[in-house]
Length: 173
Image (cartoon, rainbow, N blue to C red; front, side, top):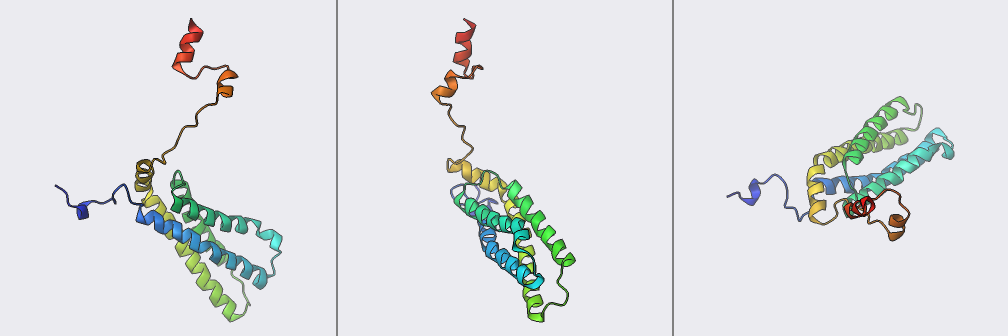
């Protein structure tokens, strides 16, 4: 007989805590990334139109975090790998594009935000990848596993290829 504290995975009825932490980190990092975008505009005098990709990434982080906490993400592997790679890419970009000659307070703020962003993205990515199996089990126990969409009568009527075994039998007669 195994005691509850011997198990490695949480019970299937509870949301995996590592995945929950990853979702919360993604939601918390989206405003930080937004502040970094604003600081890049003010410090380096960047044209706001050039910041389209970082703005999309900011909203993507927010969306991924919300969808993860709701249990709507089908698979966390792509989100985890993407988050980890984005964190490493941002670390490289922060080192390469470091603003020289900016005021000291701006540099300190930018350094703290960059370290927090890189650490958070990599941590959330690792947590999402590590908790992927438990998350998939939780989704299955909640009835959220990938559902196959039912075909409509119109799709059945106008489809040349019979999909059901009973339809194939009728066409062979």
